[in-house]
Image 1 (spheres, rainbow, N blue to C red):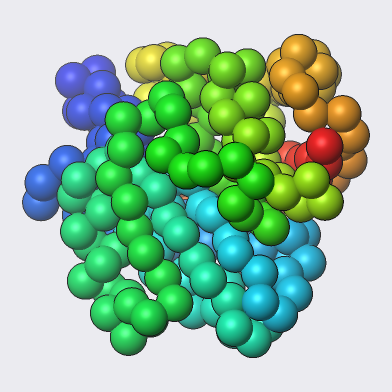
Image 2: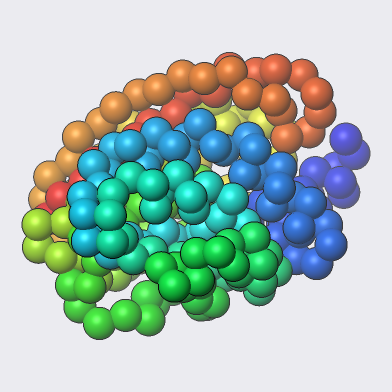
Amino acid sequence: MEEKDLKILAQHLANPQGEKGIEIGEMMNATNIGMTLESIKTLLIEDGEHILEIGHGNAGHLKNILDKAKELKYTGIDISETMNKEARNLNLEFKDQAEFILYEGKKLPFEDEVFDKIFTVNTVYFWENPVEFLNEIYRVLKDNGTFVLTFGQKNFMEKLPFTVFDFKLYNNSEMEELISQSHFKRMKISEKEEEIKSKTGDETIKRIYTVLTIKK
């Protein structure tokens, strides 16, 4: 891919827009599904809980969440109007249990201590003020709640040609340092590895990623 195409891809990965954004959303759901399902599993979802996902994309994985327990409530939040609409369209059957909210990416539009479980996959690279945003997540998470943050390892992500455009990459120690600057107190690190199809072509690559389980 040429530089201009890589730049466009990077922009859509951060904030999918229009017809191309819908296509990118489908591709992201397919390539990220392993990380997403691992994150959902790590949440240890129980009956009656309220789940928040930050950066839901097209939410093609929503059924996997709602199947985990009974009487769940799901809220998805995203900065992309295209993904907000697409997630609504793809998940009409779950409209009684799920809501999708569009926001500006900085302040979470919720009261304090609303959610039992919060998770986000492959969004941390785009947070403008990461410590402030972590403190927003802390604010809306219940005292005994769990926050799962999943991201691609820096030494893997650096090899992807599009990450030079506005991606902030982290290794485990850098992420630990970041979280230590927030209000969060406890954290467990789990490293994972998987084979995925590249976002820029048909080749298969080995992705190394981290699942952080974070508590107050």
